[in-house]
Image (tube, rainbow, N blue to C red; front, side, top):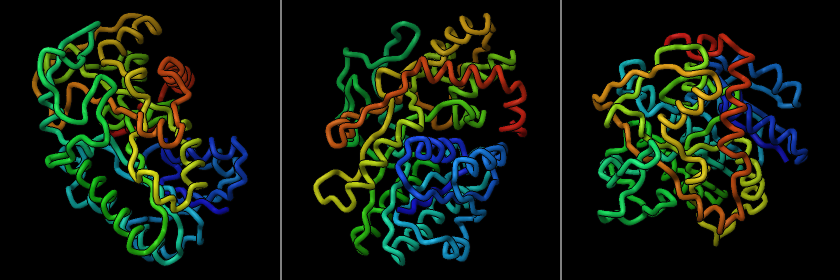
Length: 358
């Protein structure tokens, strides 16, 4: 079986490709990337050693997509993953839509032409900002958590945000581009008869993640703390109580293997949350405490001014994936943090390599 993985030289794509090769699934792995991200070139040699056939192409260009080899499945990992994209002045709104939506449309047209199945790695940021920002919060053990003193909306529990939670705009341009991609993927699959699976991921984290605060906060925070770089708690109470969960990309492989084997299963839900859930969730303040113990104390500045699209607590409830696919994350948050830290120790210039303009 031939599997085409887009964004193959990025952190998530390259980790998936290596993990699939290590599992010995017998898949012929094809990877495509435009190598636009700083640091992505460094993944090429290892991927080739792992037997991945790498192709250079821009998914925004339909002729580039049409020239790709025919595959049985396309796993779409290519995206600009920043929630600030298109609104922070570093990229335009048109660029985020071209990267995240137009590219998906071109891939769906490819699936239509070839009959390939389609797996989209989506995001927790498809959930509505306003009700998430309004969730009742209290501080416990240096982290925000749901307050039991006020009612909470449908789709929220102590386990996190479920798939039934609102996706009503505003979401951010990034979130809107991914939600639109989800909708079109479902429509294309239904109209043209190819299987589609949509996996909404929490924060993906691990060694080798590109060090940007708006895309990989765990890797960025650890690398910056390790190097005694400026760190700042931004927004809310300025104390770093914001909470996110995390998941290692290699833990996606067992799920993807099952989705590929299931093919066009008419019973299983098309959309599932994939995350480390409550067990992996931690605040920036707790992450700082962990870094202080690992690298020695470092002072973090406080800035209580709000930042666009930020949320106090975003933890995904992945119980649907557990019930549907018998899937659970295997890598603990402690292991993820240690892996990132070891990589930070071994690569002292990682922030400059992977985010030279930040």
